[in-house]
Picture (tube, rainbow, N blue to C red):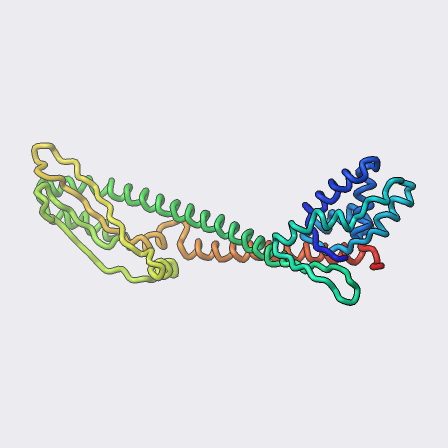
Length: 305
C-alpha cells in the first residue's frame, strides 16, 4: 500500500504504535515504523518528511521483521498498515487526497493534491518578501519626503526675512528679488508674497517638464503632484490685518530627483532587484529541497518488495 504522509502524520503514527506496543522502546518503534514505510532509518524518513509530504510504501512484513530480529514479543496483534489508515485516512481525505484501488494488485494507492499547497506556500513566502520590500520602499520614500521638507524649511527661513522687509515697506522690487532667488531652485514651480492686506506683492511661475528618469516615473505613476509650502511672515501686530505669507509651490518629483538623497528611480530599481533576490531565494530553496528529496529517495529508500 502506498500512501502520502506528512511529518505530522508520522508523529501520530508513532504515537499510536506506542499505545499498541508500550513494552517496546520508542526508538525501536520509530525505526520499525521507518522500515515499514520503506526507509532504511528513522533519520532518513524524518529528513524526507522535512522536505514535504512523502510517498511511502507501507509493508507490515518489514515492520514486524525489524522487531522480530530484535526478539521483541507481543507484536502479532499490531499492524502498521491498519495504524497508518487509522491515523491518515480521514485527515488525508479532508485535505483533498483521492483514494483509489488498483485492480491488478488490489493495493490501495493514494494520489495527493499536496503539490498545490506547497506551491501556495512558496508564493506566500514570495509575497511576504515583496511586502517587506514594499515597506522598505515606503520608508525610503518617507525619508526622501522628510529631506525635502527639511530643505524647504531652510529655504523659507532664509527667504522670509527679506520677504518681511519687502512687506513692511511695500517694496515690490525687493519682493521680486526674493522671488527670483527662490526660483533659482529648479524644483520650485511658483513663489508668491502676499502682504498684510492679502494682496499679491510679488509672484512668479513656470512649468516644469520631466527631465530625469525619476521625474518621468513619478509622473507616470501619478506621484508627480505639486506640494504647497506656506510661511506666515512675522509682522508687527499693528500692521497685520490678515496674515502676510510667503507661498512656494514645489514639484515633488523634480525635487526628489534633484535633491541629494534617494531618488524614485533608484528606489524602483531597488524594489526590482529585491524582488529578483526574493524569487531567487525561493527558487534556490525549492531546488535544494527537490535535490534533497531525490537524494534521500535514491540512497535511503528500501527496495520495493
